[in-house]
Image 1: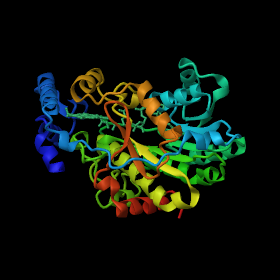
Image 2: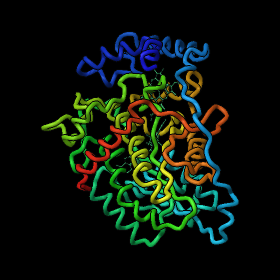
Image 3: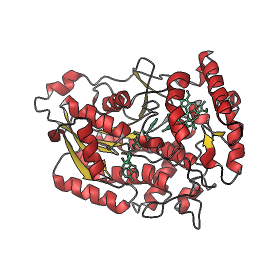
Image 4: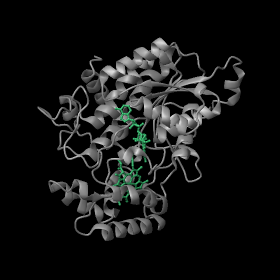
Length: 399
Ligand code: NDP
Ligand code: PMR
């Protein structure tokens, strides 16, 4: 299926390969198209070709579909508990985009107290105010996922706060599509995988006991994934594709000195590092499910919220990309979703009584109904999930 997808991809993709072999062209690419030569006309023709192919149904076999329905956790079950208190949810990266929209949606429901776990306290405070969150519905706590000390400090501070932990949402992420050289976390891990995967892995592991102790009727650990890490989709076949290989770079610590900064041991590529980190996120969720669901009753879930083309995730992309990406997603792929709607989707995964099934990767169809989606072969590889877990444990000093 991946091959089928690759064959159908717009001509832009072969151009991208040329760009990758040139040393300094990364910052002049748009949607995988070199701007230096055929620039906008190439992009527009690729985009139009994609539109024609999508509307002709050519890619219908690439779109993953529902595999089963979920068991229902009825409202009555929750409401039946007379003592049901406000839920307590930690959301990482709640200072913008999806995290902020989710925080707003949950806070507005009146049923949740949101702990906004953010690296920039002032930005988070302004963001909460700007979307009209009432003070009593949120607390901001400092967390920099690119520093393991900060993760440990956050966990200590949270434990000392005396609040219960009912749901943890691992949402924060960095994406560095134009970086020519890798940058690193405080402990020297390549920044995208270090932040998006390793920081969240440590956080989740250290907070698992807190969640176990919660008396809330539905405890959940949610790790945000993405379509672009899944090579069983058209979006996942846009180069550079996610591929963890045999994990030799991860095993070496991703430090870019005596080992590669990339998980598969290859040359640094910021876009690939991000997609690889999303594969780790989705594998980690499933490994959590296998190791802990039965004993703890915690629901482990991941999701693709839709293409939220306007968020800060694309802040490091070139201005022309940021200008054209939202209309491309709105009118051509039709995969666009607003920050507000994406926030409602993630809020559903946090609190909807019907989404309690564990080990699921949620997506939404055109009518905004949730369904269990299929992950790519790599993103559902049981052996790879175990290896990513074990190697990550070693890097973080957890084993
Ligand atoms: P944003 O850039 O708007 O949000 C990312 C958040 O992560 C920001 O609040 C940012 O903080 C925070 N963050 C980054 N680095 C750190 C760090 N070291 N420590 C703590 N927080 C950090 O992007 P999105 O809202 O789009 O992304 C949210 C999630 O959604 C990500 O997991 C992304 O992979 C996923 N996603 C996004 C899609 C999209 O189309 N946008 C599609 C599929 C998935 P600050 O505000 O300080 O920069
Ligand atoms: Mg993609 C149905 C088609 C589809 C969808 C749903 C997405 C989502 N994208 C699709 C198709 C295409 N994209 C096609 C045909 C192209 C080539 C013209 C294309 C290009 C493209 C680029 C260059 N797309 C991108 C980029 C990015 O830099 C974004 C990215 O990969 O960030 C990691 C991106 C995305 N496309 C998406 C989504 C959801 C993203 C962003 C995010 C993510 O995974 O977080």
